[in-house]
Image 1: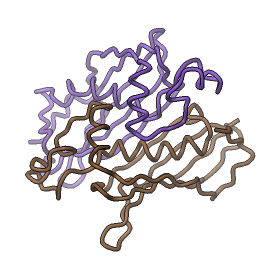
Image 2 (image 1 turned 90 degrees about the vertical axis):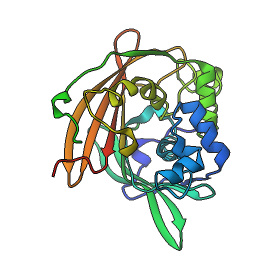
Image 3 (image 1 turned 90 degrees about the horizontal axis):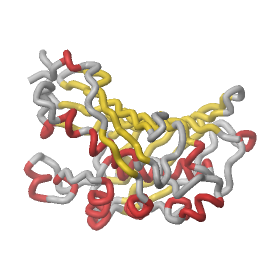
Length: 141
Length: 149
């Protein structure tokens, strides 16, 4: 990954998208790797009992896709100073999640860039945002 | 039942965690990170890092270990079956790398209410063996329908 230079960043530019089609094996693998064993992510009976259509993806798994897009754009995960996301909608198995971002502003003094981040899924002909109003501060050389 | 606001500011005991290469690999694989800096120490060193690097959301592994003592605190009065994860923030001072021995210390940063819901913010500070802060995580949990009307 080549490190992005501060001078090469333009306000308004979009970062390259990253996408993932969620499958149930990923839910189980992520539960094990992260230690988040909440049954809403792997037990359909439990998920339905608490009013969900079935098992849903981990919000933090979607956040990981968004931060992957961010780190790959920056060319170095060490450039990321801060990242914050809001979880708004669940992701269902077989849905394709697309992580997106856009440069909002540049701080010439601090050599930092502020970006907006979000994630999209298509459901019933509508575009929903499992992650909305995400924000990151990235310090670039 | 509303959350106990008197617990705002309460700090809980730190939980110490040793970051291992295989755990980083396992996590990187689970989140679909293919960049070799997350898989091979040599690739990370070639890219200027001291050791194999943990992906940006790796701190979740730590706060999932330090957080239960907060959400299960009987004095707080949180019913976890009513909880959804509202927001997540990470502030990074440096990348987490293999070999780090980190202590995650959680505190209740804020309890607020908006409409019928309450918002509990847990701030977890992760410090290395030298006592330097590596990452600060802030998770806001929404406790649905528990605000006093």
